[in-house]
Length: 384
Ligand code: CMC
Image 1 (cartoon, rainbow, N blue to C red):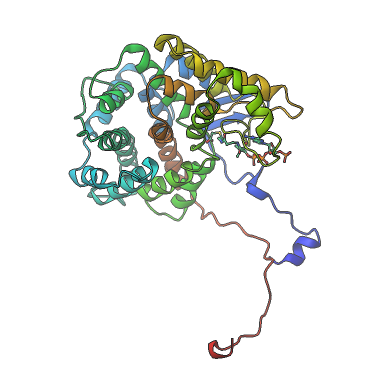
Image 2: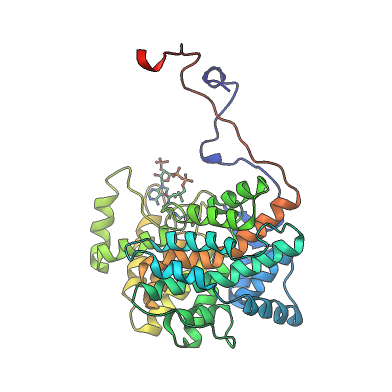
């Protein structure tokens, strides 16, 4: 399509694909105005309070909440799929200390394909096996990298522990208390799925070429890393640290928002035009974590920022990344691991979408309005 089509009004550009419906999906429903978020029809608020991450993995990959027997079966599959291949562990250990954890995760996940004897198995069983393997191994990659940066060896999995508890075990080499494990489990449930967001759409675009799940998930990690997407949670804690104190919130926000181009990380959303329901839950956990750890400062500062942003002429509301930042930081987790934690959870959603995409596939290939030069006379290299 040429620019002529554009100027004549025959076509309209949907910048950022806003409001463009590209496919149907049964996995996730979002109503940004209410607001409401459902995984396979179930309200996120109920799932977050009542389900473990393993139940959500079952829901996303099998389309239904598990019975007790089904939960035991999928938990066993996830435990049996643990165990990072030695080569991948070696890559993580050898990564430069200056590297970004999301880059290490992306590289390690890509390498997982090389350690899978059947990386391109496209049978339903093959796709499910790869989804379980990826979901099981993400916490190990993130934790091994976290420890390697601190000069520590990777810790072996604890088969007695579920997904969230084992993740905390892998990070710290000791069992976390029940509140910390519950908080991590809730965070994993809340981040697991979110319809056609940028990283999931990336995964679907790759899957739609009939490429494999490792490629789709590797690409999705690259998309999640960006500060406008999953990278925002790290941006939020950097903001809180830069402000430093609740008394400085107001002057800091007033000064920063003078600049029209300023973006406050953890605020605004393409779909939600009111408070993100995931932020409602995380706000509670941020407060509880603060009380539990005896550090309420980051929560109090966050509430102050939220109050200021919602009473502006053009109100902005927190998204999932806002209160997750103060929650993780109060749990003693360092900022550079925040976005990898998002990935540890979202991998199940990505895999569910790859499976759905390939179940009724059509190549995803949009068009653009060409605004470049036309029919330029060719000039040989020695005459240019
Ligand atoms: N800070 C300041 N102004 C903002 C922000 C923000 N965080 N978000 C939106 N706006 C303003 C923006 O300046 C624009 O104003 P105007 O109409 O006057 O030009 C208006 O709101 C609409 O913004 P937009 O950029 O057109 O909205 P979008 O749908 O393209 O972008 C977004 C959505 C999430 C990229 C954006 O809100 C943003 O940059 N937020 C900060 C980064 C962030 O928190 N990302 C995490 C998203 S949720 C979790 C996830 O999926 O990863």
